[in-house]
Length: 112
Length: 113
Image 1 (cartoon, rainbow over the protein chains, first blue to last red):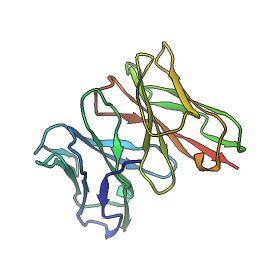
Image 2 (image 1 turned 30 degrees about the vertical axis):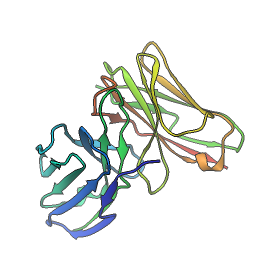
Image 3 (image 1 turned 90 degrees about the horizontal axis):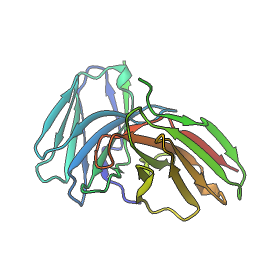
């Protein structure tokens, strides 16, 4: 099935460092979402973006909807051990289609 | 308020068997979507239901079917199970089918032996 290009695949960082990850698509989306998934659980919605160029924050997390509508970025500032998990981007094409298309995920490991 | 709930949590089935997975959406949400997540991948869209009607279908064989009930809960059925159907099955709810924000349940871990 179709998946978005998400990078990097994994990151090993020191506590307190900032993190950046991104997601690109060959198609235009009108919604970009970022989720976090921990082992044995479902994805948890972190940030939703609805307009090209939109920049939205949720605590230490900041995400942007690319102006081309084909990409999105997620930044985590001052990482802490509980940020560990897999981060997924997801896009929705729009119209009556409600399905989300996901990236393969970025696995984040944080060393205390 | 309760989030999306799914049952069972885990399930082990044999090839060729049939399985039914259940999902209850967040109260007030009318749309339910089903996703399959295999290890190391992001979720893949299977179905979306809204107001008891199928509104979207992903690239899955006819062995996969679903339905939505008047209380907006949903069932996913898979017939003639294959080893490759082993995955985490996720249910997501949203208040409307055209809304991007979908909230996921904890999933059902299906193992086919």
